[in-house]
Image (cartoon, rainbow over all chains, first blue to last red; front, top):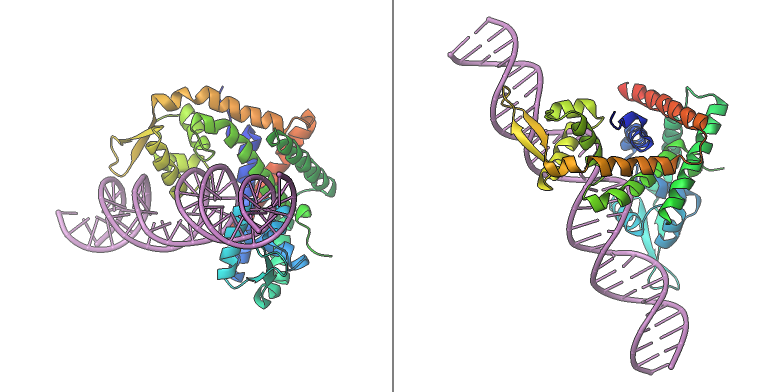
Length: 146
Length: 146
DNA sequence: TCCTTTTAGATAGCATGCTATATATACTTG
DNA sequence: CAAGTATATATAGCATGCTATCTAAAAGGA
């Protein structure tokens, strides 16, 4: 009996993640946004003027990933980089008016995707699902720390 | 109160998927494999000589994704493409000896990752987790069909 | 002060996955 | 059989994410 993809947590999780991404893409592409920009925007909507370093600390992404995504966001007119007042190595990331205007429609789109994805779950199933994911994430993180 | 990443199913699922991928990468990179090659190898280990079309039907991936991954696998000496006996458009994908030799260590690596990720879950939690993921996947798939 | 080390960010290069499109072969229909 | 359609694969081009490496500025120590 061979390894069955659909009994492999890693495979199923990857598949589910791709479906989430596709569903979100559908809804935010018309706003001119991509899925990778979303976490950064969420952070900046609640806390503007962060440095790249601070963004990296708050999001579970590598520095290079954030730098590249910021480049695309700058190109697309969503952010501007302003020199840091005291540290010449750093820059503060600020949102443009355009990016601020997207907060409501974009978060609504993300909430719609979450609602649709979880709609067959009872409140307790949903709670359990989040708890289980947190456990799995914790287990993988401690493995990776090895 | 703003949108909280960690209460967003999409975000958490994406994060979990990246951690699974990283844990698997750690273990199969020494074998010369990447995560994207894994589903294709699994399929071919159990059913060799499939066409690209058949692979696409069995894996939830786009045709172009499979074509590109097969190109890398050919480059890396894992597969060979042989002309289809009757259909001149198709090719049959065959494993090399090298790829066949990787079946055991690679599936063991994947099983190790799954075991580690789920180790804090009881049997019933684990069962429930898979059931919930299947429901979420189904809900997203039916949304995307719209 | 000068030198070393650390830190912030940029960049190169790659894999994975996508959409859109091109190409070549097969099929179908008049 | 010719003409048009459908199918199998290839390719272009992009976003997201990674590791590894480079550069420039800051911090610390002799």
